[in-house]
Length: 227
Image (cartoon, rainbow, N blue to C red; front, side):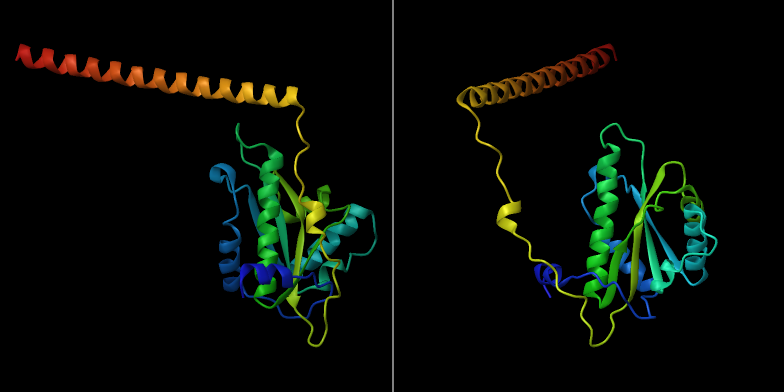
């Protein structure tokens, strides 16, 4: 199956069976999902496996966040939950929103890979997602935020996830507005100025390198004549 076919076939499964991918299969898929575009290769994300009693602990944390007396049963809807965490790294070049986009990209690609591997997946969130009790249960650091969970399990036999609305690609793939003559002239002038500055910078760098070579050459000649 091509990547195009896999993406077209992907759908979310709100109900899944009791089996889930094992640790090693998951490691392989996560390794592939981590190949998403990542400015400066910061790896500003991590994933947390929730299986068995982990899901019950999450249910208790959700109840605490909501002030409920009984643990939430929502995490028990799938045998495996994968918590998606944005783990922000210090960077002057890459802002937080861009790092969060990387973490989201990993989750989207992982959900696609899981679906292509035959597993049912749905990405779930809630108003409690970024609550203190839920963050504590996941062991998040002060530089981390939860983006939700991938609920993963077997696709029920003989059932379909339901129809999805078609995407009007022509309406969503747009072009920027046409520039006025004045704006176009200003843009061209700015581009020319940028090229000029780039050329001046390159010339300055070349002169500096040439000067450094001459200095090194003179030093070498002086050393040779003195010996």
